[in-house]
Length: 103
Image (cartoon, rainbow, N blue to C red):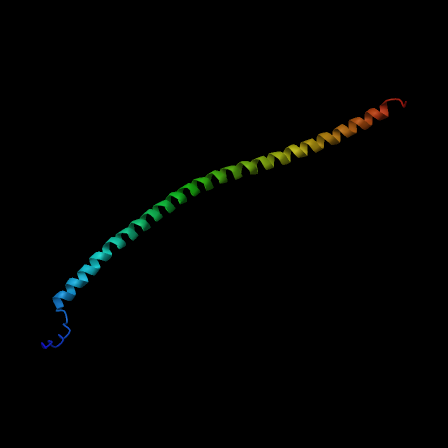
């Protein structure tokens, strides 16, 4: 029967192999890191666009609010004038009823 050789002792990679392995692992991680960075940049650009759109809408809403407030003041004035006119019409109606002979 042939003799089997003794099992080889585990070899420890040399420091040069460790650095080579580390560079390979790090170089594999560069691509996902770049993709993640691009995704962040795109997300930030979309948010910036939304912010600009919302700021324009806020300015438009403030202009509408100013118009509504001006219309509210004008409506108050018109209402007062109508109330005064109605009171005057009531006076005229009562004066006419008193001046006309009864039926």
